[in-house]
Image (tube, rainbow, N blue to C red):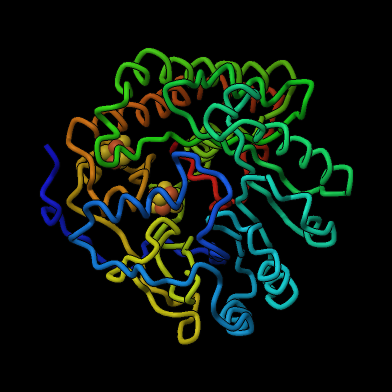
Length: 396
Ligand code: SF4
Ligand code: SF4
């Protein structure tokens, strides 16, 4: 049974952490040229179904609809900020993307894209990206199964093209995983194949469970029998690779957890940064805690025209299963949006949290070996560093 929607209270409280810079997803358009089940557009359709408890703005502009110099002024108050283009598919609004890159001066630009239109963006823009997160789910057959026939080929051709044209930033394969995915097989394929070798991979579970999704799914069996063992096998591979190659591969869920175990002195907040360091800017200029919370008026934190990036409100949640959880300090609560919308039953929560606990345990078990490799000088602590809140949520 679903929890009553108002059974838990969201609270806004001062940040226990501070950070030198803020991250902003700039939503260029809500439109997408793919119809994958994990997309932003589908989330909005779900809103339509039974999101009665939230007042939603259904009339938001489809494309960026504010004066870009206002965004430039907003970002200039935190010149170290990072701007990540987001959608829908951000490359469906290349004119706005170019205008933002010509006008706004953040420390870094990043983009989350499905990669299909990367060939249409001139290299002088592509080559300025610090990081590109490109959706690809693994081998051709699996990617096309989830995202549509021909997707893989077009994306890979575009990645080869931008590399040839001089892109030198970080290219992160953003993998969505669900029941048809064998994580170990797909991630190791992405790292080493004859098509395009990625050096960075992040994966994210499709665990929305909207509407009747959970009933249709085989999540519990798959996560127990396949996904969790697969994460463990991948962790073993990751540490073996450190030993044999002296390299800490950027497999973000593993990297982020190990980074915290080795270096963090404080418990983690929401690891994606949603609600406290990584915000989103709607097409109308309103600021929300994360891109998925598009249109949820209750969570509007100001408008770029009258806000300061450094003093934005922070949104946390309390009174959820997370606050009682012994892994909260490492997990961070996984997803603010899921905590706020509370679409899961306790059973569904437990199924997803078992995957989180499996991930944490997999890394924890290898920590003595990682420390040994560090003390032997085979790897260095700095190998575990990365730009936090770069769009990798760490907890899948
Ligand atoms: S493991 Fe689950 S309950 Fe625990 S903090 Fe993470 S999301 Fe919350
Ligand atoms: S993990 Fe949840 S809160 Fe974080 S960005 Fe994704 S949807 Fe938003």
